[in-house]
Image 1: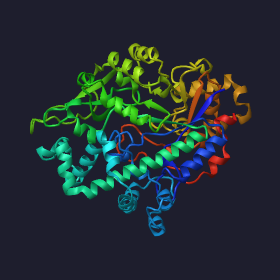
Image 2: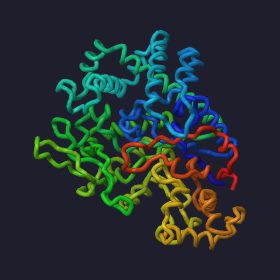
Image 3: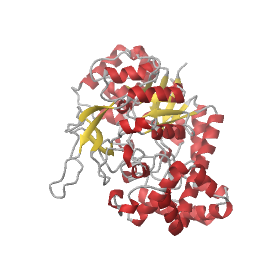
Image 4: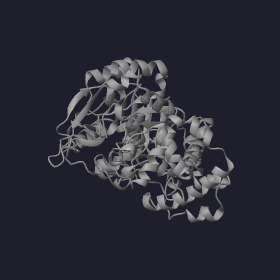
Length: 503
């Protein structure tokens, strides 16, 4: 029997507050999945987002996103009143209006955290999570003081973390820092409650752990020696991927690269703590950009003729492949964590070495069905059982959008149509008489192909279950703004459409 999963980020859940959250709608979604025989709910990273609202560009590798806090649960817990709840509501639309959400939820969270401070001891929470909590609280306080300017432009005494800096900031801005800590305590409690309910219903939660961290994050600010920075904190080389058929200039992410040799000296403690923290609220962790744990694309930052300082390159063309420390990292990973808790996001430019580490340590990889028709007519029944098969991911167009934008003479279109002709029995219930029928049912076709594959685990984005088009795409890689906005307006259609388990 196959294990089925649905990919839908928390922010995409329907609520009255402009953004999905950890409250009643999340529990209702759990109920829907359980009723339809789904085993996995996959989400994106839950960390506090920074520029572009991207969960892969967080302000912290540990601090959770406070905008996922459920106003309904705040009201149930007595932290806000009914008028506060009503004031936070927004018109229900199929996208997240982030500016309005931030404005209304900031006021709500301030009220809730003020009540939380007066009722509950928060200092123990800060101390028990001091490894990341104190740098995070200090960093976000300084960001407000400096109006979110780059941290390497802070005054010298503020350019990196120290316990003394935390103490001095707390003396001046203690109330503000306590509110932020309370918000973290609240969102952590709500996430734990959702996780407990989810697991009690037999469902497992899969989430992502980004490989790289945002330059504008508390971890880079507080641990500069672990990253490829100059003494002033400027990036010397940044992460990305080389050019491919989809991106002629490659992808320039701008994240500072790790100094893997330095990280090895302390036993990769930053990664160990990140993984341990993620596994507290996830049943399985998808290791994002798995390739980068073996080798990574390093793009040097050219020196500006004007001031002699490194500046971000315009694209990823000037990069080179560099070796990480896989011979040291993966044995440690195996020794500390059960291998069944991981999925390797092994998409992109694979080589024999990357595959050898994935297979040597028993890390299941991924297959994205959308990519499988470009070279030939595939044989999904022969796909390895241990791989996780996706119709698409958050970075892909939806299946409907993908098919609608294929050129009539493209290899993917030709090979897909050939596959459909050669496997008519698989699609017998769809009534595929002509190309219009195929266009109408393309999402169901892909679900059936996935179901027929040799893979034991199948994950389908909610957009592909619903057969949605380009307006429901979650992310366009390389586009800094305008992503991560799509959301459901209700569950009505999801309750009516066939799920992969119905095939």
